[in-house]
Length: 214
Image 1 (cartoon, one colour):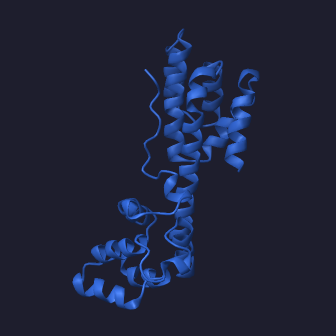
Image 2: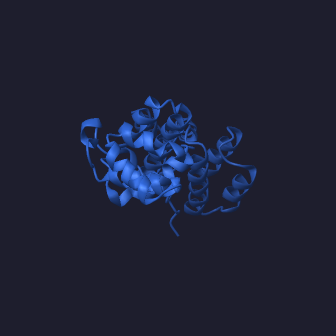
Image 3: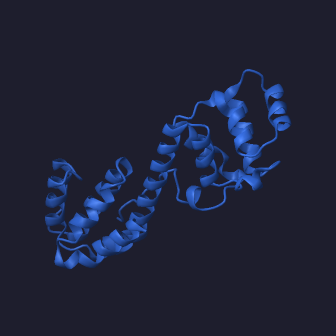
């Protein structure tokens, strides 16, 4: 049975490509996770390039419903209405810049963290097929990862108990690694550094470190 890779909702496409109306719920959920105050939806719309008239219509149609107003505001933005393209278009960077210009720095910082996490998960998933086939000495790797705080003692015990099947050891270990990365994206770098300490895994670790640093 192959190790299950992440299905994290923050797919890298949300951060690396122009956004479309199909990603409306993803953008809305992203802002919620980042703590953006929905009451500032009108100012956000103006900052993103929407006309005041457009936003006033939204407000009239949904009086006192800030959640729906934010949703409709984002819908117009993703549809590139009004002057959105002159503000950089419907992209993650435009959204981040808008938050910063509104002094919503905490939300902007969390947005950046979401992007870094998505990148880390994407890197891991990209290299997962090779890791699942070529990772050598998974028990020793797991022991060091446990000392580094990447995996728990319980996971280490599970890896050890999967002996003598190396594929099973890899499966248990890699499943735990993706959970750790989803919790703290910088652990991918720790994982890569640990791999580089083992001769048979140096190439794997080096490639992951390179991708993480780009």
